[in-house]
Image (cartoon, rainbow over all chains, first blue to last red; front, side, top):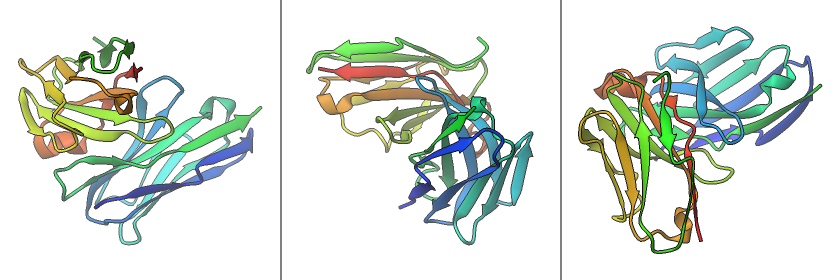
Length: 113
Length: 118
């Protein structure tokens, strides 16, 4: 059974700092991996999607990497801003188990001005 | 519409009541997903539709949960005889493609319905 773990559970950093969020998954047979952002009381917003054949994706100040063999992904946020404060969720779609999307519990990020 | 919408945004039900939660996906999106999100946790998959066909309902926690999408657009998640453990945020998402393609594409989420069962 696929399990997704995110570390740390919470993170507080000063504005301008570069930071890394970690995601690990137990079954490397994945179709893709996505990073989402969730603001309080709102739905999820897709940030980056990495197909299983890819190693990384970039969008603005965000860079996500994928290492299938080790079951790990990282989300790198450069020059963090207070507006980046949110919960960041990692999700994988497996090649088995009916193509369910399996989410981690998320990392709650707070960027201090 | 421009995005996925859900209604109601908040629902308070007494234990034992039936509730119906509505999802309006992005127009033209073939795939539709329902998730349940408990406080402090990530969303958990409930069910998946490709147009009007419910291809995966393995995440529905009990036979009290029922979902439909009769015309391949709007979807309704119904919970019968609600229990306190059903209290959660119910999220709906849609994606453009269907089948394997739909699963692999970006999912667009609605704001969710927060259900509280007393």
